Length: 385
Image 1 (tube, rainbow, N blue to C red):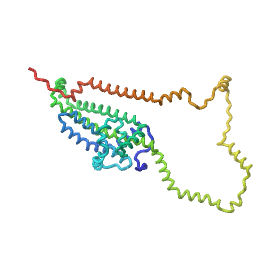
Image 2: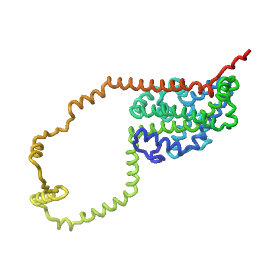
Image 3: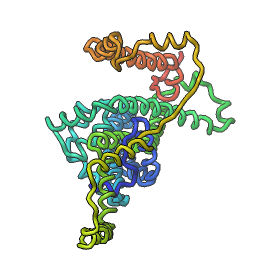
Image 4: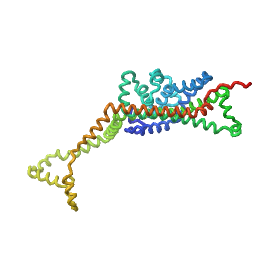
């Protein structure tokens, strides 16, 4: 890995600025990322749909659960493209089976529901760390930017749901008005499950297409957070500065040595040594004092202004600060770093997550009838006598 070959500017960034960089990276290589993702995921989705045609929900769940296996290909492409080695579409797709060999079982089991999945995935795939070494590495990386990675996953979930609803609404808008006028929504909601199953598979297909667009961006944002953290920890920006400085000096070093040699030539001549006059201690001291009394070492300035007696008294009686923090501020900072405050912050985080989940559940319950119309499975109404 040569930092000088990086296609982006290596410098410390804020977490949100780093994610914005990930979006730009995904946009720059969008054709390669989206094409490779579609080639490996859509056939898997078609196979799951065909095998589980009677259970569309299970097919969608399995496809969603396999996302960490699919995410390894965009990460591989971005890591190569970062240093000017962008692979071709054919080469990238051929590399995907090899990328599945490392810690795939862990990625699909106990690590599957991690909210920092996109941020920590490069540690296993690119650095090849496992076990205790991986935990130590994560302990250092997650000291910063871990919260932004969790927010990235949360925003991604909300975005996927919003895009799915948007696709379903767009599908409804494309239905001819003549067909729509003849619909009876109560009868449509009570059709047989075999007849309405195509609606569920249609919704699943919309979700698969949404991931073709969104999932490479999600991986790129997590990868950019990882790069930003390593830039801060390992001072990549300073390393690049010293490398560029060394390259510049290596080009002008011969000229610089020649100039220095020419400057030293007069001092090597004996005639110059004979003409030199000794400098006494008194004259040297006087020269130094004269130099120190002149700018820029000393800049005397006379300022004349009016001042009331009260102002003078207030200035004389104003206590001088010793530059130390007040005791109450020290106590406040100490309390903020205490374990009790950390527990309170953790409780507030759990409360906010609970409120978010409760709100989503309430929203789903509020519009349950509408959801049943498009994705629900209904039993046929028994015939009337």
